[in-house]
Length: 291
Image (cartoon, rainbow, N blue to C red; front, side, top):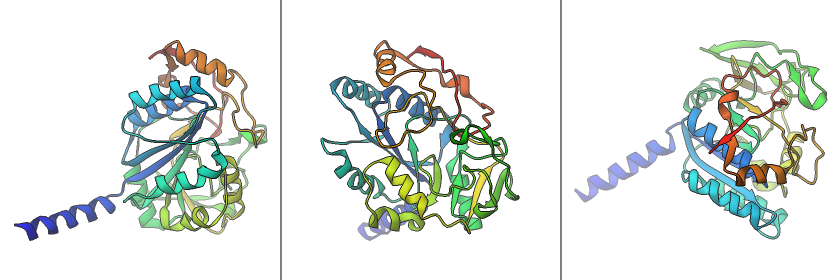
């Protein structure tokens, strides 16, 4: 009986490892309100998720207290708090969150919202079948503009149907900035073994620098996958990073969002269900409702 239990344990462990689940590592800094909306949308619309990890940073006790509220609501996530030297602990925390049984991984910023149902195991199946580099949840036939180039037109690249509702395209055949950007922390599913070398062997101290350095090493000869319609949208309500002056709405400061959160409010993610955004990052006037 003991030997049978050992064999069964090894068998089930191997099944878990090869289950087709996808890990997610989220980056958050002084945005408990946006993180709450992201986690709520993941809980509502996303299946096939493996380990959910949040690497977060709070500039003071007020933000820390708000993050504690998020932790209470979304207990399924693992939370990794950055310390007094965030540039030094960022990479070690990524590698710690990385170390799981799953073979696939994606990253996310905290101001992304999942806007329609998506089964990540379906994405893994497509990646295995096509040997594509990554599966881009932010892309779809609805994406025709780029927010960071002033909504410049992004022409849909040449593509082919490889599975029902799933298309493949070559990065080098793309003109738009979002389509020609293989290495991104905006919810793209990668086989861990194809991206591990960069994250283990390169220096980086925050999400923006990490993505920037990673992007410089992109191989445009590879292929990516996308659904008929994008599954996520990034709502850039404000800017909190200190290193990259990215375009943003500047509609509510981080402090104002914290004030709303402390009033018991949340972003109404229902307003974004099946939203037909034309760019992965989009201005959108969010509505706040009671938690």
